[in-house]
Amino acid sequence: MTNTPAGTGTLDGRNPGIDLVRGASILLVVSHHMALRIPLAKTDLAGIVPLPLLRLFSWFGYEAVFLFFVVSGFLVTSHTIRRSGSLSTLDPRAFYARRLARIAPCLLALVAVLSVLDLLGVPDYTITRADQTLPRAIVSALTMHLNWYEGHTGYLPGGWDVLWSLSIEELFYLGFPALCLCLASIPRLRTSLFALLALSLPFALDALANAPEIWREKAYLPGLAAIATGVCAAVTVAGRPAPRAGIVNATGCFALLALLAVFLGEHALWSLLGNMTMLVLTLGCALLLVAFQWGWGQHRLMHGTRWLRSYGFMSYEIYLTHMFVVFPLVGLFHLSGGAMRTGWLWFPPAFALSWLLGRATDRLVSTPANRLLRRWLQVGAPPRTPPKGIALWKPNRDA
Image (cartoon, rainbow, N blue to C red; front, side, top):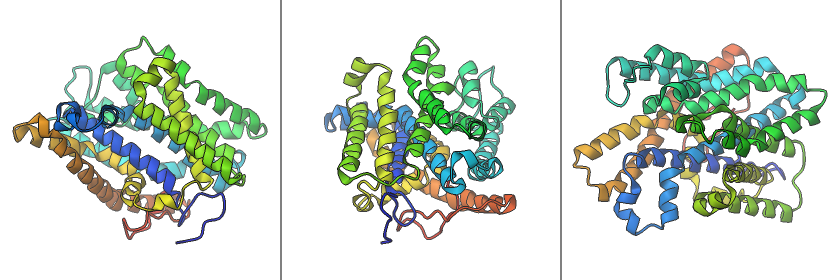
């Protein structure tokens, strides 16, 4: 095992804690999309598994996406500071080129496949709403406003619908370099603005209280606030050594307890805090990332978590493609007779097949296209290696 510099929180060039957070998040997303169609509460697990755990794997896909937002802000900001020295010296061309190389290949491939399925009239992939069209769905997906389009016209088929979060994330990064450079001479003001945006999350949710459900879930401002939380966390730890072990342990334990309170004590917390609960979620995630960056639990995290970290390593690919697993499995479930009490047996295959499809997408699309685009755009990055044992290739496609 490679030695790790104090305070970096990385092993073999990777931060295992971040991969764990992303891995857990993508599992919750896949499980949520399965549970919408095969409710776990109606299966035999309802009499065996404690209700909080059953709810965790049924209804927390939305919260899991907000964890992704925080992680994204943290990673992109950390890598930008590492490459440029500071946010004030960010190179916009290189920044946009790396985002393009990382995001565009899978996005374009997904939109192409979904378009073909729609034209063929394949069930679950065909746009049927009278006020929605395939050309508008394509444009909304490629111009970062699919969430806005759904908010005004209704849900698109599941394969398209997952792109709502990507629209929010990439809109943030479209303006990120401009804000960083415009406030280059006053970095404290820049950080304060990111902090204000991060803390605006519960107020943004309050303002949306009377909006249609679809817009409450997919509005820009709450997602932007979550990303800003990750940005603030990255700026806080950048270039600073880790504090003494007691502070690191306290930070990690407090963050973990905050997340457990949200995920396992949802009803009590929401009744007490209302929309502030989502701020507990995003701040808890940010503190956990800070603790991981300081090296909290890094060696323990390497033992017995390879499978979960591998999900995190390919979380983008799995997120974009998992509905190609969910719909066929749900269809087979109904064809087999749809015995709801044994419906939970279809979840493990969904997790496994989603991983396999994500890995195939990574190897056949993400990695080669990312390398080709970086070479063509003349931007480089340190090799990004997967968690030990899950693969032999070394993709160069970090955020």
